[in-house]
Structure formats: structure tokens, C-alpha cells
Length: 136
Image 1 (tube, rainbow, N blue to C red):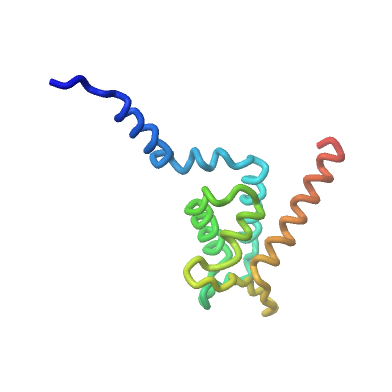
Image 2: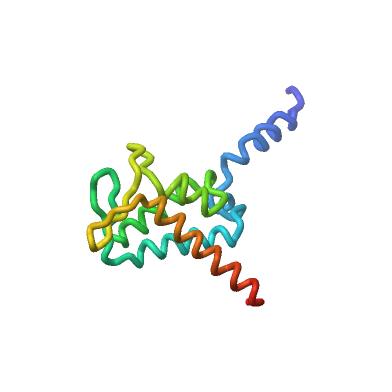
């Protein structure tokens, strides 16, 4: 019987280990401040009760849009390192069709979701800067 070489199985395990890493561990690599910004952006969509979220020509409620964005973020966690990444890679367009997401407000005005999210992110970051400046 030939002696067992442990180097080969160990190498194989080390090679395959990253593939077995749960997505939760990948999410932990995201800066907590960025995670909080993304979560705030999703909450802001959910709060748009009178608006509709347009995705591939179909209209969705704010609650459904927020759920969609949360799930899409989870599915793309490894590509999202910042709130800006979330906006650019998850919240701005359909991965299926490439069409931009739109937000239709009660008055009928429509804007691309990317514009909405960038404006909201700017407000979030400004509020944080002011909070830090005031010692909070």
C-alpha cells in the first residue's frame, strides 16, 4: 500500500475553500457605514408610498421595489463595496434587459432611479458630515 500524500488533499481544500465561503462572510467585508447607507437608501424607497417603481415596463409598489432591491443586493453582494456601487450595479437598471429603473411620482413625474439614489446618497453623506462635525 502506497503512503498517502496529504499535500494534494490539503491543496484541494485550500483551493476550494473560497467557493464554500457563505455570502454572509462576504457581506461582513463591506464597511458598516456603507452597509448603513445602502440600507437607508432601500428604506427611502419603501417610504415612497405614493410613488411607483418602473422595472422593464412593469409598475411596482414602493414595498415591492424595496424588497426587489434588497434581494438584488444580496445576489450581488460580492460586487458591492460601497453605496455608490449599490446605486451603479444594483439599483439603477435591470440586469435582465439593461433598461434603467424609473420612479414615477404621484404627480406623474418620472426620474431614473439612479438620479434619485445619487441625490439621496448626497443627503445622507451631508447629514453624516454635519453629525460628525457637531461631535455626534
